[in-house]
Length: 319
Image (tube, rainbow, N blue to C red):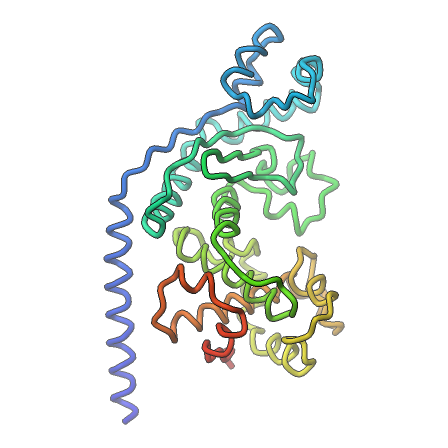
C-alpha cells in the first residue's frame, strides 16, 4: 500500500512538471514589445531651454500645479545631479531589467488575454521609497533611484529592513506586486486570516508571473531570513493557532506580523532573530496548499474568499 502511494505521488509530480514545462514553453513564445523610455536620462541631459520639449514628450510627468521654474531649479539641484550620475552608473542601458520586465509581460499576456504592454518609463523621485513604481493600464513608471543598492549613501537614514529591498533585482518583483493588486479581489479585510490570505495571494501571483525570481526575492527576504521562515514554519503556525490569532480582528496583529518591520513580534525571546512579515509568509504557504489540493484556475483563486481558501487548503506546516 505504501509503495503504491509513493508510485502515485511520483507519477503525479511527473505529470505536473510536464504540464508546467509545456506552459513555460508557450509563454516563452509570446511576442512582446517592450521599449523602456529613459526619462531619467533625458532630464539629466536637458538644458533649461529644452524643458518645453520634455513636457511635450512626457506631459503626464509635469503637473500644471508645478511651475517651470521648479523644474529648472531641479536640473541644477545637487541631490538631483548625484542621482543622475548614480542611476546612469548603476543601470547603464537597463538591459537586464528590461529583459525581466519583458518576461513578466509575457506571463501577464498568457494569463490575461486583454493585457497589452504599457509604456514603461524610468525616472527619479528623490528616493520616495514608498512610491517606487506606479502601474496603470497604459503607463508604468519606475523610480529607479529607489534601487541603487542597500548601501547607497542617500539611503543612510532608511531602516535596513526597507533598504535591503532597494536593489535592482527587486524592480520586476515590485511591478508584479503592483499588478497583483489590480487583479486580487477580497472583501474588506477584517481578521488576521484575511490579511494573511490577501498577501498569500500576492505572493502566489508572483510565483506564477515571475517564476524566474527566487522565493527570497519574491517576499523581499534575505536567503537567511527565508531559511528561518522555512525551518520554523511549524512553530510560527503553532503560535498563531494557540494564541487564537487567525480569526481575531485585533488590528495590532497586522503591525506585528503583516506590515514591513525589522522583525515579527511574538513577544518571545526569539523575536530579534525573526524576519518581519511572517504572517505573509504563512499566508503564502496556505495559498500554495490550496492550489495544490484543489483543481481551480489560478485567476479564479484570486477572487476566492479567505476563509474558503483556508478551509479547503488542508494546510499543515512541515514538522
